[in-house]
Length: 303
Ligand code: NAP
Image (tube, rainbow, N blue to C red; front, side, top):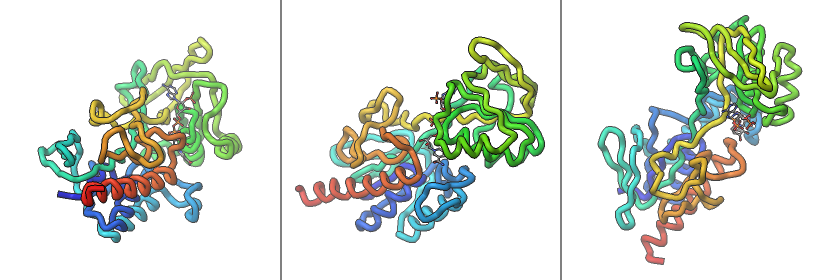
C-alpha cells in the first residue's frame, strides 16, 4: 500500500510527486498516457513561468517529469476508472482491472478540450492542437474558434505558418490577455471576427468552409483548416458522487487542496480556482502534497 496515489502527471501531479518525496512519502503517480506531462506538452511557448521565459511547453513538462523522477517518484501507466474509500484506505481502480491502494489520493487529472459540436463538425477534421497540426496549413487559410489565451496564442502561432488566419469569437471583446491581443493584431494576417459563432462546418474529408452566425446573419467563409480553442471541461466524471463538485464539474477545494472527503485532495486545473496556469497548477501540487502529508501524519500518529 502507498502513502499517496497521485492521479495525473501534468504540472500539478508532478509537483505533488516532488513535494511528496521531499516529505518522505511512498508515492506513485498514475498516468493515462505513457510518459505524459499533460496539456503543457502541446503548448508551443510559455512566457509566464518565472525564470524560464519563452520555454517550449514540451520541454517544461519534461523538466517537471525529470525532477519528479530524480526525486524518486514511481510511475504507473493506467487510466483510473473509480476511486472509493474503505475506512481510511483509498482504492483506485484502473481500466485494466488493476487496483492501487493508499492512505491519500491527490487528484490532478486536469481538463479536456471543449468540443465544437455543430452541423458537419463530426465529419471534418477539426484540430484542437496547433503544435500538432499547424504545420499542415502552410500558406493556407485557417480559422481559430475562441477568445481566450489559447485561441489568441493559437492564432499567433498559425499566423507564422498560414497565409490567413480568422479568429472567431462569440463576444465583442477577447477574454485573453492584452499583450497577446496586441501581438495577434500586429501579426498583419489575422482577422478577428467578433460576435460570431460557428453554425456549420462544410466539406468532405477536409474542411472547406465554415458558416458563421454573426449577430443573426449567416455567412460562409472558405477555410482549409479549423482549430477549436473554446476552453476546457474538467476531467472529474469519476468523482461524481465521491466528493463535492461545482455546477461546472470542478472539484470544490480551497488553496489547501482539501476536498469534501478526508484523504482526498484536488490539485491543478480540475480544482475550483480563480486562475488556471502552469504556475498555479504547480503551486497546487505543492499544497496538495503538504496537506496529504499532514493528513497522513494524523492518521499514522493518531493526532
Ligand atoms: P478560456 O479562457 O476558458 O477561454 C475559452 C474561450 O472559448 C472563451 O473566449 C469563450 O468565450 C470561448 N467559448 C467557450 N465555449 C464556447 C462555445 N460553446 N462557443 C463559442 N465560444 C466558446 O480557455 P483557454 O483559452 O483554453 O484558457 C484556459 C486557461 O489557461 C485560462 O486561465 C488561461 O489564462 C490559461 N492559459 C494561459 C496561457 C498563457 O498564459 N500563456 C495560455 C493558454 C491558456 P467567452 O470569452 O465568451 O467565455
